[in-house]
Length: 307
Image (tube, rainbow, N blue to C red; front, side, top):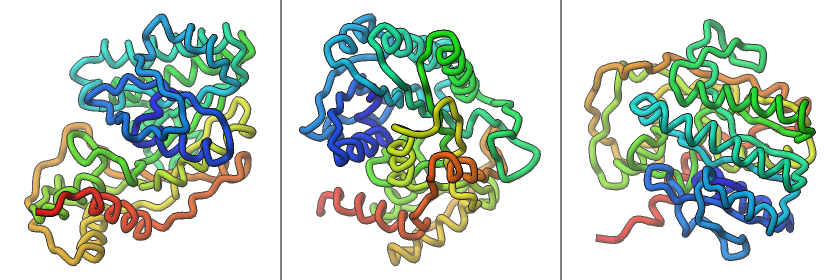
């Protein structure tokens, strides 16, 4: 499991361990990536290593994984825009290093964390697997390129894959600092009883999918979805203003709101049709947004240090 110390990856590790699988986590713990050593359970093996490291092949030889879940990535759109070469180095060269090690060491399948960012700003919603991909950030470009490499390695080298294009994933362990999801950022501010900033008019929407539901898709992909690429979302559009009002309800605190301008490149809407994932993986999200937000709020509240 690459990136298994991160927000999404660590929940997948928990799910795999719960099924009795042996799990090795390979993670660089990059300060901007959200990986935390504390996120890795004792029952999982851990290797502190970058996916670009030539020693990845040695780790694969020693552990002999049957399936590789590849979630290590440079995931920041802002960083990718500032430094496209670094973004491509991690997300493309790093991927190729993992794929080569997989082929050499008899890995049967790679489960890949792709992204809704590969679509850019579509003309129609909801987004599904047939929606044209026109990524507007280097991050989205590298995720799209990775999907093509996965197809190549399957057809030419016999390495199976399943790729999952995530919507806006939220939940416990998401870093509320820096370029995180709006839900975790807002929760951090609400718990500190601070004001929040809402950019644009707050009516821009996203498809928020709970991290434990995402982990469930990764469990199903262990045995299903050969050569498939799937949209992983809820099919529901939720505005930033709705997120704010839900947190007021959950917390009982009405955080002061300051308005900001539209962010450069910010898409107006996002909504994913999970029908193919339901049909071929048997996956559907089961967590209502308000319930997932409540779980996330309670998690961060439990971490708060009493004053």
